Length: 557
Image 1 (cartoon, rainbow, N blue to C red):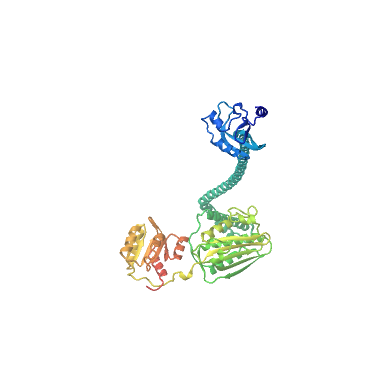
Image 2 (image 1 turned 135 degrees about the horizontal axis):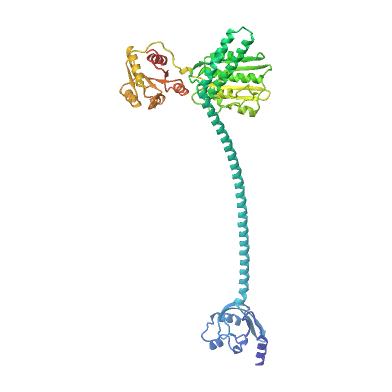
């Protein structure tokens, strides 16, 4: 017993981990050393089964078999803490090794609680996980903070851009309000001048008339005649100013358009422009036109050329200079390649009029404003600033275009484009009178006009049908074919041009005429497109209708 007690004394105080200890067994599995004294000298399995028969020894038996075979190793198994009175079932880890004793061997085994080994690992892993989660959380917080900073920066940039845009919009609105206010002032001025222009002309009429009488009666070269002449010239200038302002108000502007031979027109316009040139100015001309025709108002177009020429004369001043006038026709496609982009599809050719001078020229800022009403670079009292504004208005009303090119110190060139009438499709004049069996339908919403026309046509032996409304006219044409349709452009329930347009292709042999107050651009374009064949100006009469029929007929009838 001494030999056993001594080793047990030596190992009884050795503890491994929380509950671990040292066990020594012989080759047969008998316990030689154990912290529990009751375990000394008993077989590991059989002795314990006898002591504690209700326990599970399957996992322990496998390890003991390996030890009896003199194996060395580490085993993970299920067993009980024999040192604990409650003997709880636990997981154990045992490291064992055989030790040679004489002819036999002992097995030295160190037993440790499974939790003692893996809890530190689990705790370390948990700490690592916590650290990793903390890093991730810190990174997430940093990303969120960075995102907020970037969002705030983007918001600040957007707010700055919005403020810039708002400022630009406010500036545009301010400029727009100024422009609107300026346009309203112009409209008010136009309305006022349009209403009082007639009174001004009444005041100027006796002044100019009596001044002219005085000039005729007073001795030639006398001081009194010179005074009368000054009165007359001042009155003429005042009349010109009133006429220009009245024209800008769109009142008293002539709206009658006629077919104009451009060659004859330019010849007369050249003589008129020469009359305003000083002796130091030499005028040249080059007209490369033949029988081209334009539809327009000769008085207004003369005024345009006169205003442009007067500006050229003022640009040359008291120096010697040249003014060159040229005129030729151009195809629409050629114009589209230049500075003019939007062109009407109605016109195929344009007349190009150029007025070029070698005067002082203009800078870009001045060139941008020359067509603005009341803008002038002349000294006070020398210009009204209405000439070029009126010229642009007139050319636009003629469906044309006007613009200028200029360089400071090199002179200016004004370009005017006017649409050319298609002479190939213009009606030919035939001198014969229509037959008495010609079927004519006249539509007008004025019963007295229709009654008068019916009586006059019956006097010359021509029967006509009259209508006052659109529906009545449609039924009339459906019930009986007509050779000539004459319809008022301003009927109460329809437009004459619109009605003729609705008949397109239905009555190809019927002549379509429009009764109008004055030739407008819309009527001219309707005839150009073949919607109507001609027009009759008011006051309308049977003779005027017959003349229009004769002019529209392409062959004897």
